[in-house]
Length: 250
Image 1 (cartoon, helix red, strand yellow):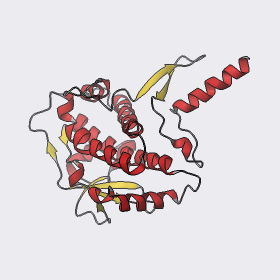
Image 2 (cartoon, rainbow, N blue to C red; image 1 turned 30 degrees about the vertical axis):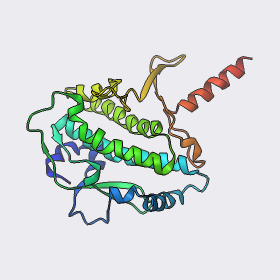
Image 3 (spheres, rainbow, N blue to C red; image 1 turned 90 degrees about the horizontal axis):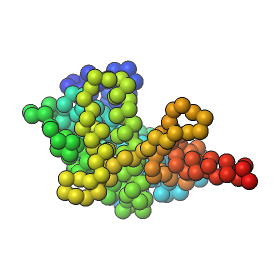
Image 4 (tube, rainbow, N blue to C red; image 1 turned 120 degrees about the vertical axis):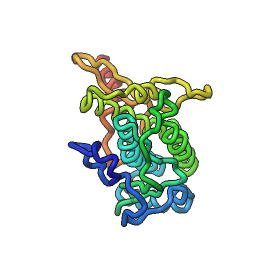
């Protein structure tokens, strides 16, 4: 654990205590650039796929990235928003630690990082290392290696980013999360390109309910892994439910 990040790891967040570590961590690791080579990527995905004989390659690759993003994004984003701490997460400097099922469990950082010398005043400045330095090259590489649409992979990342903001809002209602909300609210990047993390989920009013249902905009392809049920925010599940209702009304 990086001592400066210790204030984050309380209550349910203790599960992230040993996710961001330094190079002296004894667990075996590989450079992320090595992981993103065809031979190594195929080996990791094959090991992961052993648990799911009915899954196809694209579905398995997408599900694997969900495990990756849920490990990476919450501690990095929480460190930035809650502690104003800049974690060094540029992809070309990190090593990946996998468990016995070939799932991501930790990232070895090149250094502990540091508090921002001057607090960022711009959303994209705050998240540049994560968005452009890590997520973009990761998504581009995995999309090429797996033939999964980049939109699916970005949606997987955005889903956990948006989910974390909800968790932090409840756990720390006084925290300033405006840069986090600003990132997913922005339709475009400063250079005019489409923001791939824009509004990854939506909240829909449901019949007979006073609340709303959280639903992803893009399916994660989990349905392609036969041993897994659809996730709670699955847009395909919602379409199936609507279809069933329509059939019942005929």
